[in-house]
Length: 307
Image (cartoon, rainbow, N blue to C red):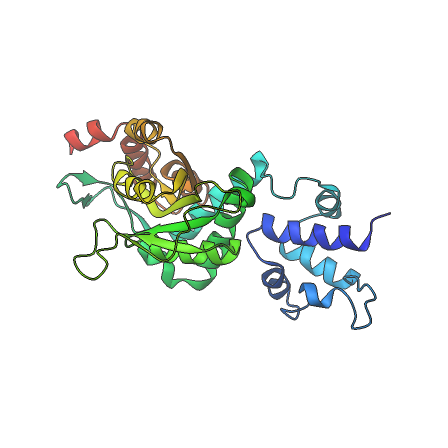
């Protein structure tokens, strides 16, 4: 027999596994958004309130879950640990959101011209994503859960948004993790305190050690640009071992090497390979475009030389 706490924990786990807060899940199911708030789980007299069978049925329906799935959530003792299946779901839902908001684009017939002057059949603009509330909310919930799983809330003291695209994502995620935020400039400000880091970063955390800071950025190609931010944070006294991006290209070997050289573990919601898989599965683009994109992802240099 499950306890009152176990049932509510199960609902919370179901919500986060699908990229929603408890209130977001209630709203998705057509319920009052406050139905699953923690303040509603006990009466004013302190008596436990249980979710109704009707509410549970609606939640299972909108999340395409079975009662067995829910029971597994209730019995889980590893709420913050993502399974392989959950990671796959996060990667694919993030890829789908990027496609639907046109934050990623495919065009093999008229390739995009990159800043380097080279051509590419794919283009990503993570800054665009901040304008789409539903998709942004889902992805930032995923980001918070990913960091809880892979880093651990107790191992995060602050989140640092990288100028400029990483700043809004740093704000969204720090709010969900209930952690302080700072942001780091590409170079020191040329006036006033000449600060390169904005916000307050303590010299030591509660354990008396350097504060653990996660660098937050929008995307990563080869990771070369991360060095400026990471070095600035470390010089200011931060312990930086992890970085998070919404999108990782995932096609350049230099990315892994650069992160290894910096002593950084990179965490990302999705990659070009995930986008391609979703695009194929849902037939978002014609076969010629998909084939050209796949050819580019397998060997970007060769593709660019040929085009």
